[in-house]
Amino acid sequence: MRRKVLLCAVTGSVVLGLLAAIQTSTAEPTSAVSETEPYCETHLGFCPDVRGYNEYEGNYVGHDEPALLFYSNRAGSGNSNTWQLRLPTEAPTQPTQNASGGTWNFQRSVTFWIGMALCDTQGYPNPGKPCPRDSDKNIKDSSDPTSPNWVGNHVGAAFLELQFYPPGWTPFIVGTSCDATKWCVAMTVTGVSLSLDQRNNKSCLDQIGVQWQNFAFLTRTGVPHAPPDPLNVNDSTYTSNPSTDLLMSAGDELTISVHDSAAGLVTAVRDATTGTHGSMVASAANGFAHPLFQPDASACTEKSYSFHPMYATSSPHTRVPWAVHTYNVAFSDEIGHFEYCNHVNGAGSCTDPGGADAQKDDDDTFCLDASISLLVSISGCLGSDFDFDGPAYQPDWAGTLSDPVEDRRLHSRSFVVTSPSTGGANYTRMAFETDLPDIEFAVGCDVTTGFGCSNPPPGAAFYPLYSTTGTNNCAWREGGTHMPRTTNTFGGSSAAEYGGLQATYYPQAPGFPPEFDYENFRRVLSTNPCPNTGSLPG
Image (tube, rainbow, N blue to C red; front, side):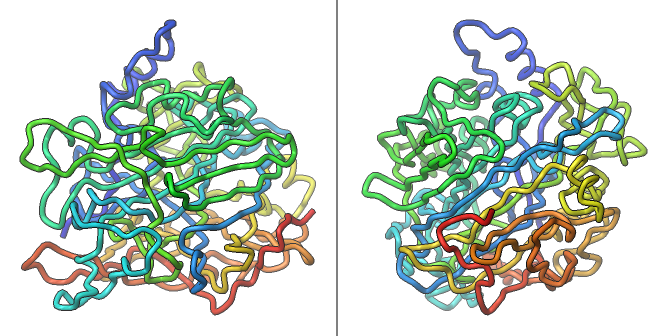
């Protein structure tokens, strides 16, 4: 079988090229990003985890995404919702190179995000098939190839991730931070240029990859400050512009709206703390586009395209058929993309691991030197942590120490986020899901049988879980079980919270047998235990 993969590997030459672009910046931006490798192959952690096709340059790079999924049969729940979010604050103790200091958000996750399934009429699994927007007619999830509802008959899908990026480390164009102290947020719309049995042409593969992305920071005017489309992105696209983009401070309280419009999907963030506002519409007018699926063409061509939500409702049946996760409306953290490195060589690899990483491993890749950090002067690596020994898998999260004073001194706080509401109503059910099996292959997990797949993963000293806080108002946090004012830990361990292995059916090319793989741990609740009241708990 073909391993499930994310096309987000990086070579040393790409790292050097991007670093050189930063260090020798001129009045006119260079085009190191667009002229080297496709975005999803050079930016670890910022594209959805894709299954079902061969990995990039022989290396598998997946994501660890502990997630909350929300379900409702209410019309509009699949395409319109509102959230409240409080941005995390950092520990008063800065991280140090010898790992004896604090642990900040950029060391635990590269981003957390809000997601939604979208139409893409040029995408997997059926490029060229019409996609009626905001419609449950698009639900196709049968495993029976003779059924009209076979998932292989699904229309092409894309996925929204409204991504929030932590401050304090290396510039976003090569690292994780837009600013030394400010948070930023971007609308990303990602698709897969693939049919059930064929990839797009070589020109498209070379320029934008199988997995492509539209990318735009939310701006105060709603107009992208640089081209967002896959073929025209440049360094400016991935460099936050303080004069146009929404920047936020730690602790700011936000109201987030994700909804459809005639022009395209709208994402909007209102910062109640500062009174500022940012938005973006995934519209042709804003420069969003998708690559045309033309496998026999000699050149890569894209077309302006307005992305709209795929479904009317949200349920276990409303999924993106190329994704590892089974979500539609979701909130997820993207963890496991930082490890300490005491020395980074000229090829962007670690020659002297640090922290809990006692020896050089295959995952000590895509490493960045402290000299380019915006604030915290430490070196580290962003490759996926396959042996689970980095800060994300240590008791370095909020609530992992029983002493609240020491916990606060060393560990940055969690985000605080409500469940979404839709049309003024709550989602009626929710689920916990993590795609751990898909990144545990290096420690013996076989996703075809589930054998050797475990939660927490082998080598991890800790795995974060979601808990609720608040009485009159309820919200979610992520970390350990000792956070003050915790009301429910859902079993008190990651094994209890995320539940058992979930077999997911994936369509195969004509003539191939059906494939069920154990990609996720998932636990679906019969209720929503944390309803949205319209405000955050204190």
